[in-house]
Image (cartoon, rainbow, N blue to C red; front, side, top):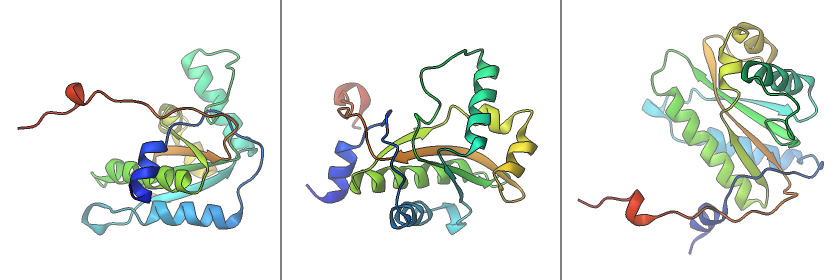
Amino acid sequence: MNQVLDAIASRCSTRGYTGEKLEQEELDSLIKAGLQAPTAANRQEIHITVVSGDNPILAQIEADKNQERGIENPPHNFYYEAPTVMLLSAEKAFPWGKVDAGIAVQNIALAAEAMGLGSLIIGCIRDTLTGEKKGYYQEALQLPKGYEFEVAIAVGRKAVDKAPHEYDREKNVTFL
């Protein structure tokens, strides 16, 4: 198998990280992987906001998410204490921004796996970041004007191991 297929086959959601911060070279490689993703009409509209896991804005997002959902005392925060969270946003008016963000986040996840890092693609904060406090969070996260949060990814060194998920080819694939 080649390296890309190996990364796809071995990647799974990581829900436990060491406290070790990523090196700048690792961050730069992940950002590059995300921004080199293809975009509709070559728009290249994806913006990545990199947030350190100890940044207070993440705790505020967590608190607001939990309040909105009626969750008290969760065992982990939404990013499972990862040292880095990347929030991807796209032009709100561009109809393919959500798809482009999904492609970019998958590139980051596969790059992280190839680099020996763990990752967790995160959508559970979407309602919080696009809800009644949208303006506040857009400013706090320094999203470009006219952009909207689409998806996030937590990245760090794995503290837990998990096997990749299996799939049922007969159920999930149709050949015509």
